[in-house]
Length: 101
Image (cartoon, rainbow, N blue to C red; front, side):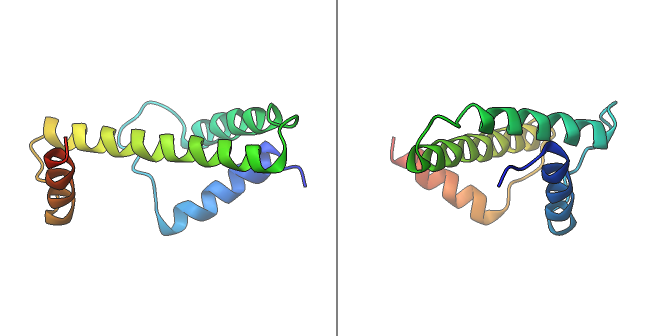
């Protein structure tokens, strides 16, 4: 089944009901940002058409993991920039990670 950018955009909105994105005061229309993202992801997925199913699955998981990591790093940077303390769980996790270096 081919997922269209419009379908993906609607799915994104559904996911955001449970986990909304704080667009803050960005000078961009939320729907336009969602549309641009959906188009980009669909284009990326189409470029994987010549991959076998396993390689496509692994590649999409790697892309998702990279985006989650990037999101986490941006949140930590934002919190630090504004002097907002991280939750105890996050602080403990990051302290454990830094000890393993």
